[in-house]
Length: 77
Image (cartoon, rainbow, N blue to C red):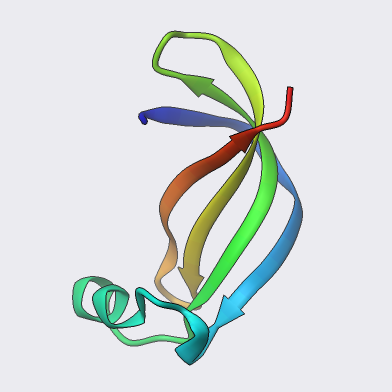
């Protein structure tokens, strides 16, 4: 699903770090080695239909590499 994050991500939590991340090998191969974390948070998003909704978002991030592979896990409204 294509979407755009509007504004700031709030209620950010770490879900997994290091070896607990299932996609760690793929992340390191594609973006490079780093201290990878799987994160979640809440944000307003604009989905492909143009509607704006509040959603729980998951992504991966590493220091010096940044946030990668955002996905919507569920809508909250």
